[in-house]
Length: 116
Image 1 (cartoon, one colour):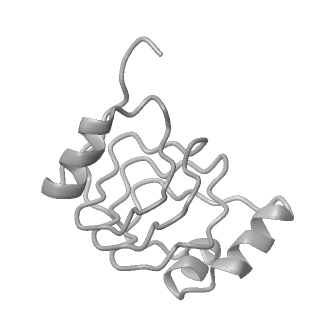
Image 2 (tube, rainbow, N blue to C red):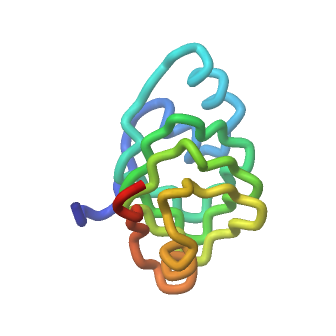
């Protein structure tokens, strides 16, 4: 899948784009769902995001602030984190460190290690 990242009209996605992460988390806790795959999160501060169980595959996080996020139970296949701030972020064990570094430094899309 290599479609370009999208800015969707979904209300929950719009909360994230508008920097209203706590409101997104509240809606998520209430059971509301939205399709966040292939979304554009360029330059957005997501530090307070409850990412547990989210499918963020094929998303674009260029220069986003992901510091301190627990992404260990988040689907990130095909996502790109070029230039993102990732200090203290916890990535899924299935994504090798070299994939994360390549994505951070060169914008490649992260791939999961097979066999895990």
